[in-house]
Amino acid sequence: MNSALILAGGLGTRLRPLTYAIPKPLLPIGEKPILELIITHLKKFGISNIYLSVNYKKELIKAYFQDGKKLGVNIIYIEEENKLGTAGPIGKLKKYIDDTFIIMNGDLYTDINIEKMLNFHIAKHSVFTIGVKDYSIQVPYGVMNIKNNNLLDSFTEKPQLNYLINAGVYICEASIMNLINDNESLDMPDLWNNVRKEFKDIFVYKFNESWVDVGRMEDYLKTQEDANVAIV
Image 1 (cartoon, rainbow, N blue to C red):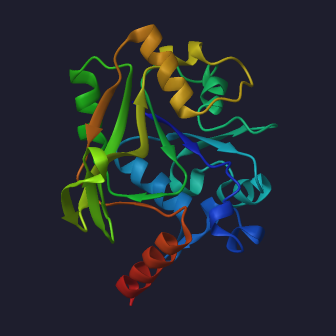
Image 2 (image 1 turned 180 degrees about the vertical axis):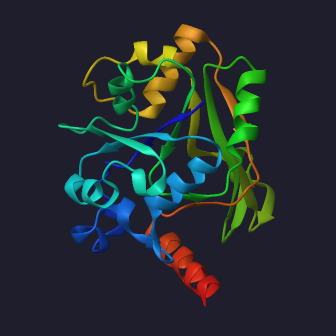
């Protein structure tokens, strides 16, 4: 596996006003743009063919990364003339990729071990593997459980709810591209439904390495602050 699609075409509405001037993938973490950190991380695992799906302020992204040579990779831009959703851009890779490839959201700050995820994908003979993370939410109130006639059955004071969440990292086989029409607007949940109908199984890979979705303002500012402290 030496190819990756990075979804970098979003409007970054949750990061406004920052993204009015700068597209989200170019926002810095420490001294480098988020997207550069993602590409550098992919390169560590031998992934050198980078496909960037771009739309919003794409000219700035293209001007910064150009053909990717300064980072030691080859970049091809997948330009979305219309918004294609989170899965539609995959359909534009048909003429470029014919084997296993990775997909990553363009707003992730993560140290995920891609080699381990790939080994899992291969061992399961998977056509589509979703990277997931543990996520906990603390309910700030007492939760009441009620029986018939409005009788109190039990209560839990400020419970913690634990979930596995989609981490925006996927490993796929090229065969899934046949499930996406050219220039079709499609989101990941719809693609997953199509994959399950065609191939039955989608596997989930839980990883423990660091991961932050910096697409939310509070998470971005915290990550930026931590990175600046580390630099100092």
